[in-house]
Image 1: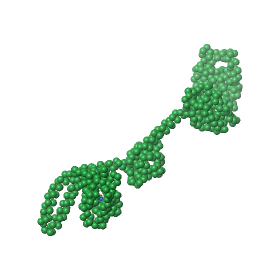
Image 2: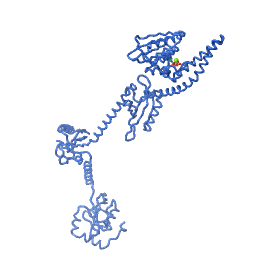
Image 3: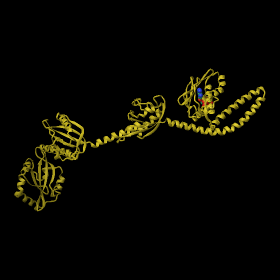
Amino acid sequence: MYSNRKMTSQTQTHDLQQLLQSSMYQTLFELNDDAIWAIDLEGMIINVNKAGKSIMRKMKEHPVALNELIIFHDEETFFNGMHLRDTQRLKGIIKSESKDNMIDISSIPILYDGEVIGRFVQAKAVDDEISQKNDSKVANTYWESFINHSADAIGLFDLDGNIIKLNQATEDIFLYSREELIGSKVVTIPDESYRKEVEFLQRKVKSGKSVVEYETVRKRKDGKLIDVAITYSPIYDEDGEMIGMANILRDITERKKSELELRESEAKYRLIAENTADMIRVITVDNEIIYISPSHQMILGKEVEDYPSGDVFANVHPDDREELSTNYNEMLHKKQPINIEFRERHSNGNWIPLEARCMPVLNKKNEITSIVMVVRDLTERKDTEELLRNSDKLAVVGQLAASIAHEIRNPLTSLKGFLQYFHSNGDELSKNYYELMLSEVDRINMIVSEFLLLAKPQVSKFKETQLDHMLTHVLTLIDSQALMEGIEVNVDMDEDLPAIFCDENQLKQVLLNYTKNAIEACSYGGKIQISLRKNQKHIHIIIEDNGCGISEDDLDKIGTPFFTTKDNGTGLGLMISKKIISNHDGTVTFESEIDKGTKVTISLPYQ
Ligand code: ADP
Ligand code: MG
């Protein structure tokens, strides 16, 4: 490597030797404790001081070039920097007999006439002790820097609680300069009442315990109060004796503020949840219901205890459960809100149709923390839908009825007239047939009349009418049929029944429909009880029979057009009756048990 280097001129080496002879260099050179070699620009040793010689003596062969003596950690840098006018600092190892010694190397340029003509290479031993000292010095520097750059205020106190040392952050947080604080006891407390707290905390520390993240309030120089968390700990010397206390004080004003904001917004949402008509549920990912809004009580008659842990869908209709849980799991999987419809059991046993929006609540890591369900009661909507469907049917029926009824009625009238003519003139045998035909024509006529009534409710003629008179009249109409079927009809009326404002003919038809149904429901020997009762505002007409009763399923269908269980029924009677009653601002309810009988209650208002 050397041979490749540029040859130093003879004059330069001569100058160097001359230079080194001069007394100024001699003293500095010879009397230095560190080993120093003077080398020319090729790295050949020109001179060496005392300390250097003593190292070289320990070597078997006398080295001539510096790199026979020293192994540089970075030889390249050393030789490349040879001509530079800077001092280079490097590390290396000095070979000696016993062991290799780590050294710090300073390579100092030797200048002559402003030119670099060689270098002094100074070696400083890096023994263990020195390096240790250096380490701890470095460590101390680290500590100091760390403490000074910490965003938390850090302070050291003596055992009397006097401030000895504070870091930079203390100034930043409290706006006091360190000089103002050091030597004093705590002046950042908001008022004297806090001194007891400080003394209490310091007493605790003095007893050898630490105080961790104690939250309290402190005052800045400008008077502003800040929320802080303080950690106190005792400081011990090498012998384990307590010599002071350290405290780390964190400004948590922002955190407190956001905590407060969080609490406030929680309160706000709770207020909404508690007061909305919709039901709100909060469910954990482990299927635990942690909140249900009070509206559950109103709509489903349920409390949070009614929702067992681990099974959110415990109250769901068995037929809906599978679809619901499939959708629910998909929501958990996709982390997207879903809408679902299902039924849940009311505490009274009824199934309530519900519609729910399930929303996963995600945290910053996009993990689901909980699920919020907003559940709405669909009963009313379902009822309206049902009503709409029925009224659809009604509209169609109405149109059909109007046209058909007219078309059929006219030919029927002439059919009936001719049949009656033949009937009165015919022989005995054919008379029976004519009778049968006439009754069939009557039946057609009846159906058509009912249709017509449906299509165009006849012009109502409302007037004050006594219900008891009306009932008596209707009873004369059905008495004969009842008698024939062996059915007993009893009537019971309250006294002084008020008159009601109604269309007599229409109400008669209603009574006829219900009593006829009652008779048809009873077998031979049945009983029918008709009662008229009044209360403050209504008259109730109650028609009870002990007939076949109505099944739960059929009870739902009652009053819908064409619903009949009879072979020759029209399924229109109840529908028309219902319509008439509601035209009179009245209501009708059915109670029925299969094979026990049916109770119909018509309620009509009076002035
Ligand atoms: P229809 O009498 O022509 O069948 P309705 O509208 O009058 O038509 O009655 C509809 C259905 O309601 C009947 O077919 C019957 O199943 C049921 N129903 C009505 N009243 C009673 C009753 N008192 N007891 C048992 N079933 C009844
Ligand atoms: Mg009927």
